[in-house]
Image (cartoon, rainbow, N blue to C red; front, top):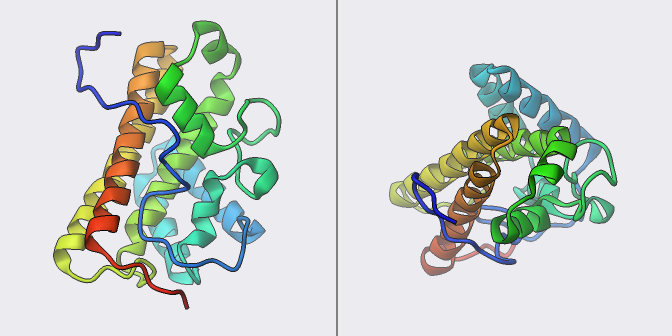
Amino acid sequence: MKHSATRWPAVVGVVALSIGVLVASRALAVEPRVREVLQKIAKLIEKGDEKEARKQAEALARTLEELNDVEHAYKLRGKGGLGVGREAGKVTPDGLELWLNAGSRDGVTPKALEKNARAFEEAAWMIAALSEVNRASAHSGKTQLKDRKREEVWLKLSAGVGEGARELAAAIRAKNVDSFQMALRKINHNCNSCHFFIRRGVVLPKGP
């Protein structure tokens, strides 16, 4: 498949729940309180109120005990994640991580994009919301970043996920299957780049 825009490598099974430095988590699912705020942030981004969305993300990041409190969102809905879209069972696999990996690898058919457009778009806005919380966590002490350079990389890659999510929403609205896959690959590229950076440059803490 040829694209005129930047190519992003397809990645299979590597997103592994999030971008960012994660600490050991006692909870295995997204708490109802966190879920509600994430949904609010996603809706604000969809409406174009980026300033308020960022404000809400920063407020949420300050209240989190650890970053995994939101990163569990990428799991399957049945295992404590948020799923793909608000309605359960509309999309298979019904988990952001596996959906990102499958779409990056296989793309989507026009029929599936048409049928699941709303659920896909809700997922895109949720990924954008998660990227905002990841960005905000750089200043909240939840990431264990050691210096300015690591913080800059964190912010850049978090922004890359957010940009990919917004491009994904635009592709869904345009019913463009090529742009859909490219946006998913961009999200995965930034996720995996962050994981690689962390493994090579940051020692994970043992937890709180």
